[in-house]
Image: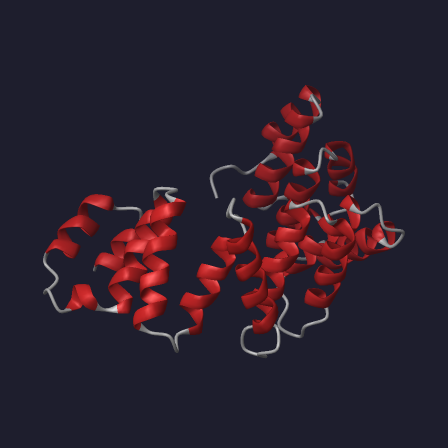
Length: 231
């Protein structure tokens, strides 16, 4: 119940459920991992680090705790902690069960640090995995864009072609355009989408953000008038 409440961002229910746990449960790795989830919801990085460290200590075989701790440490101000986090994730890239997540964390960190060549290399590696997600492909697109890589234009065209028949992917790519201040490109690409995709609510919401970002009020009005916002 406590974990479900944390995931639902129901702090009151989580507190009640946590208070009813027996003393023995509070000595478990899972308990400290749950406290780390609460700290994450509260954006308390110091407490999250402490609780994940304790969870990893109590259950050293749990690689998920180790990965979460390592990923958190990538954002630490302490250079040694950052180095330790990177070292752990780099080692995890050798494990087929962990390599995708570990590589994604490293690629995201490289992009944050503006080490764009490293970000491109890691994101390309991520994109080569058979279990890659659409979000992983968008990360490669971001890395190529940040690095001003010659392969950006071709990969963007590939993404446009592969995303046009899926409303979730179409909405995600429109959102990517918006985040990267390419609203005009988003609007232009939306004109190539099939009506059945363009009419999906998630696509219309993302496209409305494009019109707002481009200050295209006439286009926004047309979208509002034509859209099916109730489904």
